[in-house]
Amino acid sequence: MYNKGIPFYYLTAPCSYYYTLLLLYPGARISRYWYLHLIPFVFGLIDIIPYTLASAQEKAQLLALVVSDIKMGFRHSYGYIEQKWHYILRFGLSAVYLVAQWRLLYIYDPRENSRFQVRWPLAISFAVIYSLQILLQGTLVMTVLSNELQGTFLLRDINQVIWISLFFLLLTLWFCWSAWRRVRLK
Image (cartoon, rainbow, N blue to C red; front, side, top):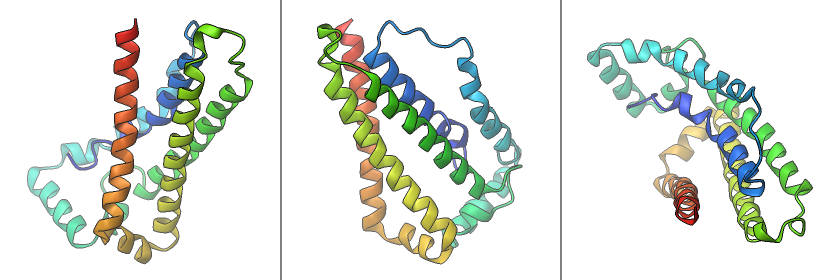
């Protein structure tokens, strides 16, 4: 399963934006060019093809290499795009979508429609949590890319990895709980 998530990581930012859009404006129409948001996903999908087509032995060798030297997670040659660019691109796209998401919150007037006033605090809470996640992701990316030795040290500290993983788990649970609640309310 190593490396298989790359294309899906590119979908987090647009999904977060559309979640906020549809939470605040349930009747909003999605642009007819929505599929343009999938372009990074497609490039990520193309990039994992060499690893996917590699033999089981080659995959096991790469995983053993990554386990013994975490820097290889950023330096391995599988894929068409250098691995560090995935981190940079994802963070850049996330920052752009986050600004757009906060813009939605800025222009939204909760007094405009009293029926949706409950959604306003939910959208703000989600945006704050997602902003913290992007900040955390950005600091990790910058640390790992600017000082790979320190970055690998961060990844080897089990307490930091647990806290970071817990944060991502809570964000995922937030997504699932909100989706379940939304479906249940309909």
